Length: 136
Image 1: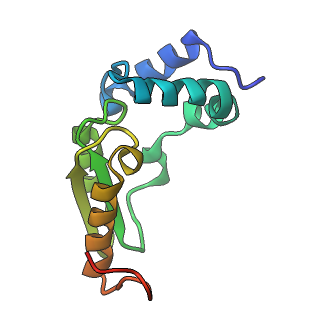
Image 2: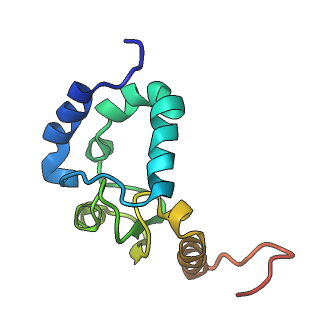
Image 3: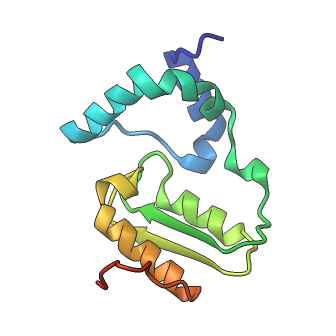
């Protein structure tokens, strides 16, 4: 396989995982549209075979380490309900599900919200900010 992405590939993925991830809507703003364009022209061809065949549920639900999910409320690729359902099934010594404003890549669309949620999760484990980092 040459790694190229074609419409039939997307159709296959959406049919295969629709019950888990829901339906897909095109990005509404120009920044997101430009990101998607870059993905399809640069990263996508290399990542596509893995993404097409990967199903996170096959990794299992038992994790021996803390498990945190920081989810974008406006994620239309992995809707919050699907992410929450997955996290509810996870067994870990500590787990947390947090929704923040943002889309599928919430760490990029809302970096401050993401970092605040990550900071809170790490502090819940007793991990403090690194030396030289300012307190919020």
